[in-house]
Image (cartoon, one colour):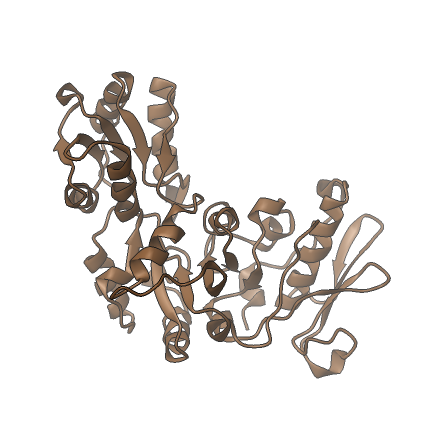
Length: 362
């Protein structure tokens, strides 16, 4: 049964207790802050929401990320930053014996986390490491990929921090960790034992545990909201782990990808940017004629009360009432998902052009 977009009667920041917030494409793009993100996070925290920053980037220390976020005007402690290096080191430590040697391909942050986990750093395949852990960092060299391949061929367990094929940078989209992992896979024919990063749900699970301060019980899953810009990492991780999720349009994902998303990549909510974190969300409603309507008023019949929008299919075209309206995108997504899940080919119908994400930002 299709799970459609959901609605809330209160702002998301009051509906959920813990935000599991992605960074790249959500809070910043490289060194540059994303519009409205910092103000929206501060407003959410003022309502009592706890924010943890979950990132597949394994190259930077937690305190460095926290310092950058403080530069945007956010009050962030290093423990609030959950990197894939933190999760990966904990994951490998559970897989091998204490004190085992590990060949690390990554920045100092990853090496530091591996050492903190009680493991020894191997410098080359000739050291016969029990495991290899590969992360992303901009200075990764060919000879490091070769050493990892040699170690994996010798039987070392192969772990990775994340499998993101791309990463948003200041100048555009660049190759991510997943693209570099493929080089080792191609050389060895061996797939990683596990990935610490999203789309695995391990990062969200670890974040819940690490957020429990002073012996507190971890926040229940149903009170956590996974927030991200990528369907194939942030949103899929939420779905795999049983977390509700919020997709923002400030990073990689675009309206077309949302409308054509398979079930395992569909979010619970969609917003243009993080201002939506402090807003109640409308649930699109199916009409008797098969169209879908979404209105801020929460009442499909009361068009005059809010920002209503409609989506319908006619002559193999999915139409919307306003291609610059976020509610139209929400309605269009529900209609497209229903169409696809009924066994129809979504590629057989023409989808609306929402003229880029800027048109949807209020």
